[in-house]
Image 1 (cartoon, rainbow, N blue to C red):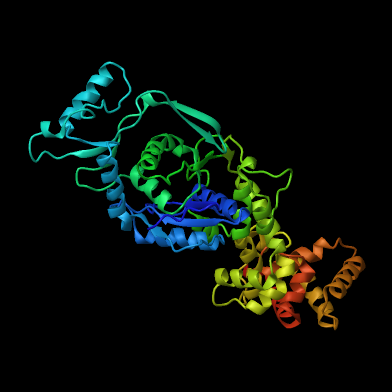
Image 2 (cartoon, rainbow, N blue to C red):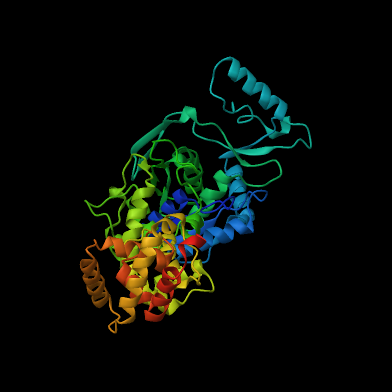
Length: 478
């Protein structure tokens, strides 16, 4: 792959397909995508699948599906790191040829003895460079070897990070790490640098757990720049990790699940999750809801904070409720119909959606709120609903049925006026009629407004459900 580097911005998202697309990875992908779009550049996707034992096609498919669901499109076909091994080896051989890397013949036993001595002396565990200045001819013929990078031994490496600011490490703290294993395969540290260069990446935006990697990867970049030129340092932007509400590192108990769990199990809309992730570590004044178009226009790295963000499920649901209310009714009807199953009538759901979505926080609540529309008689009442339908309530339902049978204007306003008038005639509060009516119509004690329920069910179905409960003998216990 020839370098794609030019004067434009190029970012990349580079997940390892050893698991699904988790929430932190989704945010990293979003930030890379938005930064590239803001600058009119390119956003690229690389699948770092060199760990063949743990990488799975299922995880690859889930990552790509999750990114698609979030509306993140990429400017080229995905790059698969496993297909680029020969290029990685080529760069390692160039580093060897020009004296920036060397063969290390230390055995595992020797290395373990070295680490044991370092532990005993309470020293940091790092390779001691024992083969850095030795001639390979000193090793017995046929001895296996790894290739190690010659990292700088003195001075310091400084990174002007676009998020973290100026960060430095003493080069004496770095060791000569392996870039080619004894079987000739490249390590992640080499492969990532080569791929970033060949893909033309100008900005490396990733979690701050990779900050130490930057100090180890820069020596490769600078060595290759000395060898052939055209390997400038990228701009690094290491974004803080996401923590749980308790301040601890985000885990499954906090909500560190795959993106598909938010979609399938929690009923979150993609625009809501994107908006929430955008605001999780990046801000623009007091704005809480920001459209995708606005995000592209506003996003920059200067707005990314240095401190970890705290994941708040309640806030996510709050934002999701906003987007549900803003969403197209036909789209919501289609999404909810899939959750209800074959019994769902999409046209009826679309008609009901303005009523249903007014207080729902997610698609699960929407589906639960719509379920009464598709119940078969006789309705299965919840225990609470059953408790509302005592003998007196059933007698009142019979009177309500008689009143509604005479009602020709089956609209919410007309039905409300009729029931209120009836309650006044009987000297009752409206709830004494509305509560058992809700139980009879929906089998539950909660629902959309009772007059909306009557209209959505229609005259015939509403009267049939009321009559089914009004006519049941209290002795049956049903």
